Length: 470
Image (cartoon, rainbow, N blue to C red; front, side, top):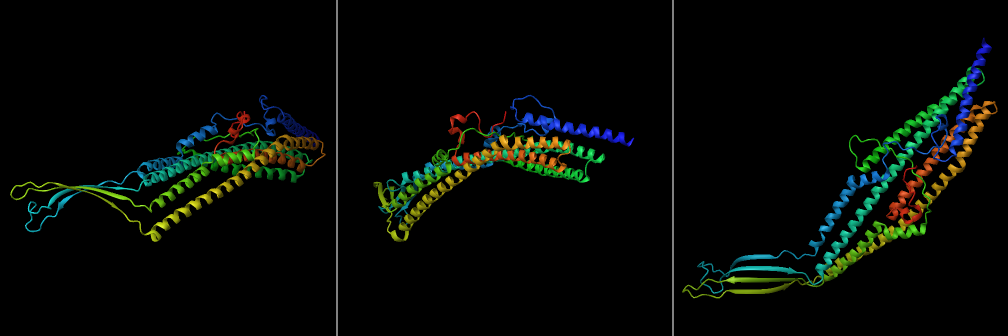
């Protein structure tokens, strides 16, 4: 009876091992076939590096960016600031309000009458301050340059929000892919647990193997808890960036793909120095400071006050009429406090202009350095992803298949089999992380350059980072 029971258990164990080997073998074959292959058995999906399948509720990156452009409070605030700056241009070059005056002139105290003295009159007057020629135009030019700088700041805000949406979207895609990979491998490790339990029940396996795979399953469960928490956190951040409030539908992000076009640091640097809104804004501020310096130097010249008055006189006590009078005067201020007032103002504006020039140069240097850094990250991540896809993962899957086959004939121990499976899991997650790191670096480069980098390459218009894999 005991012998027949052991024989039955051995048959079950052999069947489990054969199923596992079939799953691994079919998975290895399918992993290297084109992505257009038909649906595969569930067992083969446990180890293959399948392309992401977008669920019906997938939100594309373009849709989320458009949503953020409409709902982002940062963009709305920048737009209002741009509008306010544009409204400041016309008032800056306008004249001051004219002054109107009315009163009684040269009225005797005793007796208090308007017809006794010839110089007594009822007076109406108007005056207007006229700046020295050129000052109004310079004031308007300063305000116009300021408005242009604010408008470029608005574009910089838009690019920053778009970059943040891309980064959160790619992080969400990585979290979803990592969970998918770990859950798939959890099912395979569960099959290994069944084999370990079967071998232990017939006396062919060690209890240590059983405990090892149980511990690994618990560790996988802990990883899944952490990954799901990170996915929820990333999704909340993405919902904040696109301006969603309340109970919103979950966002599903498919994995991005690698773009085929190369990253040319020379062309990227040239485009960044030419098109980055932040640099253009600083250049505009330099022009503004030059206009402000010209305006400060115009303060050495006086302004004018033009005044016109009309006086109406009463008739004499005997009825003889008196002629009315008018006066026209021009007054100027005397800019005599040169050392105490005017020279320090000019020196202040000159210092601010030099500061803006230095800041512009510093931003240029920082931009080029960050651009080189992100290009290096993108290049390294792309090469790593290709290495995982074409070299490391196929070899790891072959090693796993070989370990299963050897384990079935007792040529390798259970630890080697489990380590091979966990290596495949690690490499699959690393491959997904490399693809996302590449896409995030491209998003950073887009923001540094000031426009989508692959719009500069006609050959790359078909496939761009962030698009869904088909």
